[in-house]
Length: 236
Image 1 (cartoon, rainbow, N blue to C red):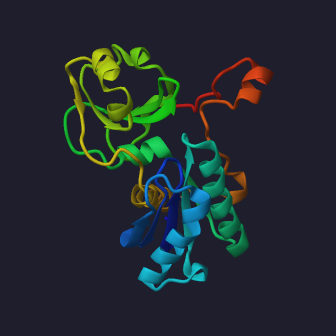
Image 2: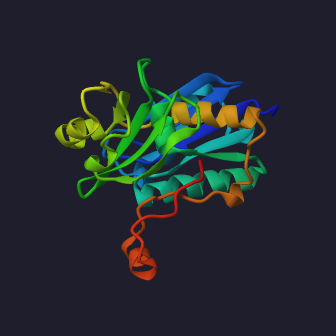
Image 3: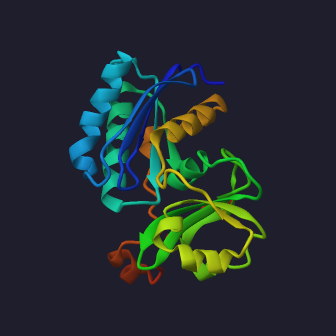
């Protein structure tokens, strides 16, 4: 079990950048930037706000958490580069967290697995499913058209942007057993922090140099090079 005390986490995967700070698993401070403000503009001011509110210096942070994706290519790179710089500069561990896992971690209680969804544009979704918050995925994160999710669940709780960007198509695909949960459609750093803390307690902290973004959808140049529209999926 890790003896790390203070953990700083960032989420830069979507239209809203957020930062959270924990001490021994308990929240110290958190903040989210205004939706739509680019990560390059708002990340450091939001980070300074959280550290200042908690009275914590960056040198006091014992470990870091960050979303690896899927999400916005540029914003993910900014968040990951920031955490890698902090962690490598202070010789601290860092934990990478799926943005879909972080989204699922805030799901309300209910029947069926949690289907976490984010807008992938072009009428498609990034999605993954979890039996419960904090557990391993039962549907590995991937890129899906709504109809590709048909027949996968007899009941599920849908969280995230999918309920906003293609509600009718998703409802038709999932059927009457799907419950579309109201509330925050984006992941938040508070859940990233909690999942990273759990990973550290289980001895799963990573060398920050090994962390890499998980885009799921390949950039167009990679599609041309490989002939494949998506990255290889993670093993379950």
